[in-house]
Amino acid sequence: MRVYTLKETVVEAAETLRLFSDEPALYYPTGLAPIDDTLGGLFPGQIAILAADTGVGKSRLVLGACIASPTPSGILCFEDGPETMGARALAGCAKVDSRRMLRKHLDPLYPQEVGAIEQAFRDFPEDNIRVVFPKSRNLDGLRKGVEALCASGSKVIWFDYIQKLGGSGMDRRGEIDTFFRTFHESCDEAGVAGIVISQFKRREPRKGGSLPEPQLNDLKESGDLENAARFVVLCWADESMGTVNARVAKSTFGGGRRYYYRTAPSGMLEEI
Image (cartoon, rainbow, N blue to C red; front, top):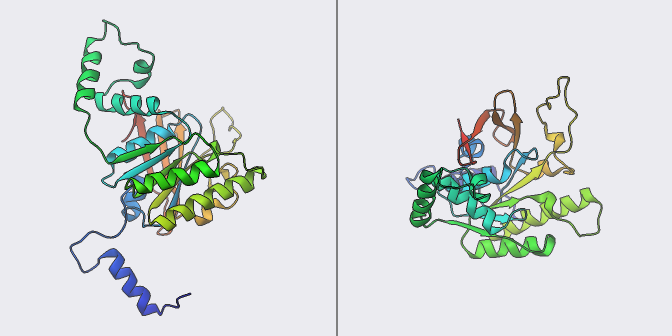
C-alpha cells in the first residue's frame, strides 16, 4: 500500500485536474446537470446514485443524459427491451409522443407526426451510446454487462436499475449491497465511472395526499449505499407544479441545489 505525503496528493490533484494545462480534466461529464454542474462529471472509478419514485421517468432521464453527454456512455438496462429504448430515442428525435407511437396512434389525422418520425428515422445520427439488455438479472448478468460496455468504449455506465436484480439467495438488503459493491468494483477495475439507478422505499403521504420530499434514508433496501457514492441525486414528482424535481442530497463538494424537469411532448424529460 502506497503512503502519500500531503505534497504528493497536491501533485496528484494538479495532474488529474490538469490545473496548469489547456487539456480538459480527467473526469467524465455525465450529461446529468446535477452532477456536471457540481463537479464537471465523475472521475474514473467513482460511483453516483440517482434515486427516484416509481413512474417519475428514471429511464427517460438516463437516456436524455446519455444523449446530452459528450462522454461515450453505456446503459446496463434490466428494465426495458431494445424496442422500448429505441422508441424513446426515436420519439425524442422526432419530438413525437412515444406513447402514441408505441400504441400506433398515428393515423391519417396526424400526418405531420408520421412525417416527423420517418424523417427522424432516416436522419438518426451515429452516436456514442451503447446499451446492453442482460437476460440474466443476477450477478452474472451484471458483471457480463459491465464487461461488454467497457469493451465497447463506454466511459460512464448507467445501471438501470438495481432493484431489478435478484436470485442470490441472500436477504434483500444484503443482496442489494452485493450488487452495488460488484458494480462499483467492476467500474473501478475498468477505469470507468458508474451511476446506479435506485427506487425509494414507500413513503407515507402527508395530510392532503401528497408525498413528502424524499431524503437519503428513503433509498429502498439501500443499507449504507450512499456512503460509497460520490453523489446522490434524489428525484420526485411535484404534482402541484407538474414538474419532476431533483436535488443533490449528497456530494463530496457540497450539494443542496435543486433542478426542475418537465415532460416534453416526446415523453422525454427536459430541464427547465
